[in-house]
Length: 311
Ligand code: SAM
Image 1 (tube, protein in one colour):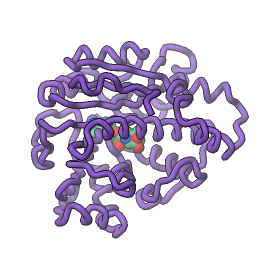
Image 2: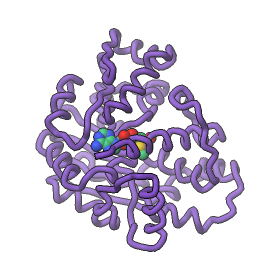
Image 3: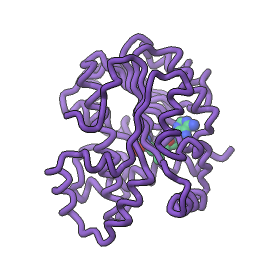
């Protein structure tokens, strides 16, 4: 199986994020350390990334508010995500933070971390000694590990090296990842998590409502770049996204399309970013938002009241 085009989606996401950060959509002091190139995209793409990053971040904070510094975070298909460092800057303490991606991607991430004092210092600050291999980095409470999400055995062994605690409340993040993974593998992963953890929340950002012409064009573009969209079946609609959790023994699930997520973001912030670039086609932005969603699934009743409109 050729996973190269799937790994390359990380370059694309990181470059788009860097471009949006440069234009002032949100603050990220670290993304420029991971990616030197900037992709100047259309304004609707920048707004899409803004809604994605702020939407996911909103649920991260709702989780943290509930569990405090007992929190463990597992970022699935983390790419060059900078959440660990951004949380550190906000003074948030996390009991254990684990990032997972294909070994070729984590090798690049580890190499960049190793060469940047700004990144390393934040790890040393709390975690003391850093142990590095070509693809993995282990410190006291930060771990970046190379593993294939489709291989539960490998994942389990790597989680052990990362000193995962099955009894801690754990946040799983999958930001634009699951669509690239075969459905039966995702089902296996979700069932495995449900069998191991008592208290967990999973935040999943990905496509939805793909059964129309606009969806066909989006999928065509991705396939033209060589991406196999093995997990697309679950992206049919919000209900299929929710059901995936229930079918794999999770306690519950909720899902919102990105129109709902975008309009639930704080109004002053939304007004601020809407002034950054002139948007020609409002209609196109809404169509894009209708084809992406954030869904959450939970294990443990403490998370069932999490919603988009909470403060
Ligand atoms: N989550 C990051 C973000 O939003 O910036 C990266 C998103 S990128 C679109 C998708 C990421 O998922 C890539 O880094 C890719 O390598 C990773 N990925 C996809 N399938 C995977 C698998 N089976 N095992 C590990 N990582 C995977």
